[in-house]
Length: 281
Image 1 (cartoon, helix red, strand yellow):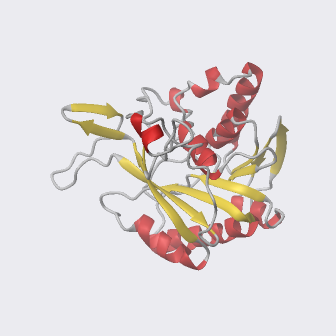
Image 2 (tube, one colour; image 1 turned 135 degrees about the vertical axis):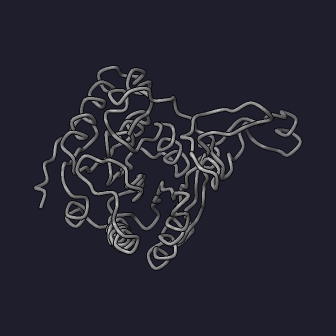
């Protein structure tokens, strides 16, 4: 059993501990947005977690964790779950979603596009698959889960400007902004060394949790929770939006990296240095 240790940096709380134990002690209905990327059970080399459970054991474990997420989340809250399958385990994310139907409604299913080819030009970064059977996997899932499926979103807050500006007046839009839709192209830079990625095998860009929070809607007193904090990317996103956050992480080394990144961003003020460190989680 990991004994939880808690510290506060600015508006943010970092907790070293097991997320199940920590969430059991959190007040019910105390969190507005949960955004996280748990281990995918793909055999990645985490420092203190075995990422190679049987599929059934992994699904059982994630179901219990998500039940605790449902307890601490407000009735009008949003749970953004970033997860991916593999060529060998393509059903895993969808098997999990079927299990979670008893806890949540799948309000939106967003595809995070990490790399895309437009014509003959490739944009973004991907990890190539060396296979005669499978194509490269250039996307991951973001499942937007809510309790009843009726959470009103700030679609324009996470939106994009119109390409055809005539649409603004022709369709009577109040501003040069439209819904981004359910495909999000968020590239991240190629990581060239283990040091550059904080020795963490699972990464996502800061723009991903920030966009999730913006889609839910940023409110002054809201709280964001990441039960698999890693090296603090969700907390960095919360700091950039000037809202409170709680991060839980079992690995002491990752907590130390998260603390270092968050301190640097708070000290910087605008967070430029922290955000440019390739967005590793």
